[in-house]
Figure (cartoon, rainbow, N blue to C red):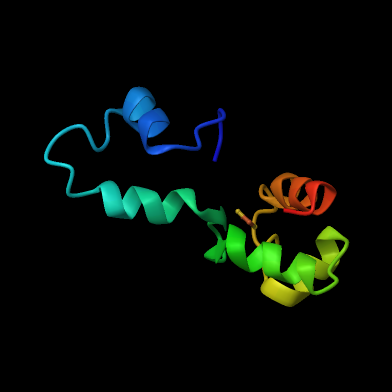
Length: 85
Ligand code: FES
């Protein structure tokens, strides 16, 4: 996610999405847990790969396909590796 937008409240403030009937909140939550939107890979999946020994972005990509599309998520993957989240 860009511009540090990581929570439902951030999304509401920046885009006004989710401020009406709220029916879209579940969809927004699903988007927020995605690290790699190109390949639909969640933070939990990337974290699991790291726990299983993937200690480089390339290894995480091999294990999960995260980072194999546009590549924008590689910085976030590296951050997860660095922080062992
Ligand atoms: S967002 Fe992960 S490769 Fe595009």
